Image 1 (cartoon, helix red, strand yellow):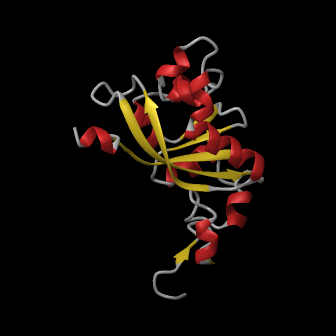
Image 2 (cartoon, rainbow, N blue to C red):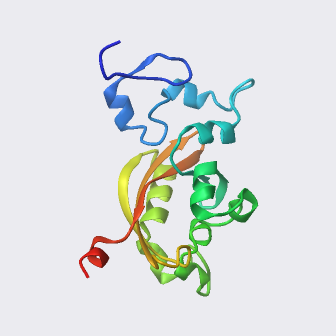
Length: 175
């Protein structure tokens, strides 16, 4: 094992650098171990998500959240029943999710980086890293507009969405 090489947290084998680039959410776990998480005797998905250390949610093809790790739930100040079964915009309290049609059905949704990234990852299998996403939301009163950096990865027919960074849009900082 060379200096600085990443090893799989489950099997302890080395993970090549090019494999890490294509696995932005589960980068510390090799592809083989990630794919076997659901196998008999595998690690329950929520337990696995909690080991990642960054806020992560699990989404289906319609950007409906099925699970979220403890880090994401703490960030949102919510419990799993308040998140599971809801679309991403509802989970993050996007102002547009309250419009007629709801999350995914408004004119604003076509430009949503979260929706586009999750959908494309689900359809193509292509992972994304540090995608800028902006939310007009009611989640944090002091930050009515949030700038997120997100990463996505498809694993076993679901999409993992990781929140890499939460903050103010740069334009707000210059005001």
